[in-house]
Length: 434
Image (tube, rainbow, N blue to C red):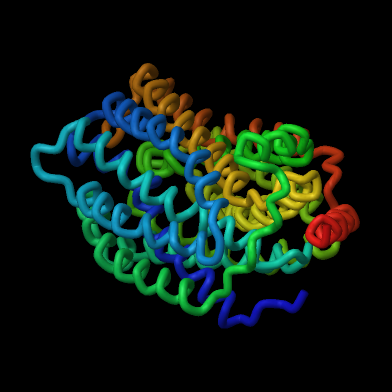
């Protein structure tokens, strides 16, 4: 199969840049913004986000199955349907009224997540279908995630460059990110082809679930992803508190985040090369192990150790590059296992379940970490006891280090390599001709 041109890769990846520019404030800034600036407090903010996430979880499989149906522009059509909802919800969420309470946060964060799901599930399924080649899929996922990292970097660099306070970060980034998203979606829709769907030999969505339950590579992969996503969600949710209260250097938060994401962008070509040499899943396991070891010291750092934490940010940034590019490329191969078993083209369903694991991880991280910190007596922006700061360090770094080691174990003896994927493609071709 011919390689996609760089123009088409860039057009496909551009929406990821804008979606990330919208997403990073939600994951990094919004919990602290609503807890401190809006004044909801840690427990109310964590509870509100937990409720909206639980609502969001219900729609993923439905959207995944729905966007697998139809013909022609089924992926692009769903992206266009989700765009206006995401923009309206983002406006209300990022620029709340003065009397905003927990109900406002629940309503508009749930609407935002729904719009995001309507766009992301078909978008990522589209990427899985753009090529059937083992190596080209890694290239496609790397371009998409690399552009997403650029969007993250823009969202991080803006407050640092403009010296924006926490209370203004969300409102400042919504208008340009919204405009960029509209441009990106238009570029993808008009410049990137959408391949014909794989033949659906199983009748109906229920029948297509049977090969999924027999798909052992997927079950192994999604288990590792759930563990690793939880490991990533904890430090993402607690970063500002860790730097501001644990290290006592809130002034360095923007610069440290920027260094982290720049390293991740630079690390993508490195992991592409490692994956080409070792294979996708051995490369991912290696990155998980290295990132776990890098996280361990962060559980024990104090205010005088911020240079050590800066080095940790660089090392874990390299790990982030692998976390973003490699599992997504492996998932595209796992879908082939389903199709070869007679389940038809169900990339949307697989991406939806994949997304579901990430959302569950973030729900668990915010819904459990914030109340645990409150129980330990931790209050962001205040003088905290040594015990509460120990709890912050454990949740930020100690637990993620352990979880990443568990993900390494979960991916042991993973059976789907290049040779197996090529065999699956031959079987799919036979099914198509039958």
